[in-house]
Image 1 (cartoon, rainbow, N blue to C red):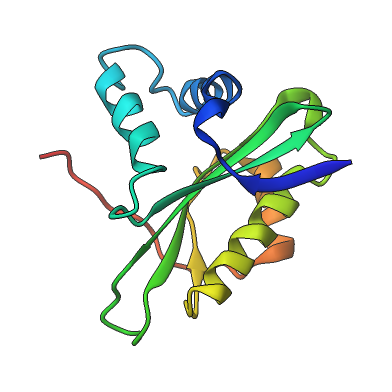
Image 2 (cartoon, rainbow, N blue to C red):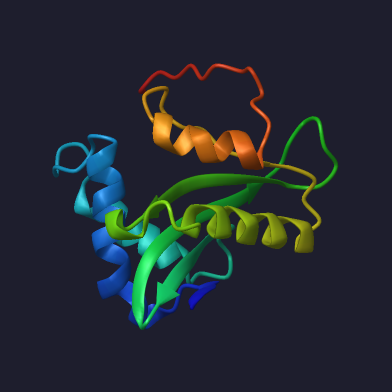
Length: 150
């Protein structure tokens, strides 16, 4: 049986390989692309009650097999905070078993409980496997993302 639960401070050893796998997938694994200080700060934010950043884990037989990071922020088009699902990753051996869907649904539940009216996320256009799931659990907005490193 798989359990979805908030991350705990003693979960670092299980979280870190999935976090590294996620960053490797997006090509930001080496120290120049993602400094260790960012990983350390991300981890700390999960446990800082002043931060709107959260992590849920999927756990099976005592092993963390999936992670999702999400945060809440203001919007100019909604009265309540909006929920951004920022990172979602599952262990390669667990893929196709409903873990990603369960993590997304858990974020939906957290967003509802917080009074948020919308959950949104981005994925890379080459992430075809994940988009099969995303097309089942959400609507494509049609918006493209532009960014500039400053």
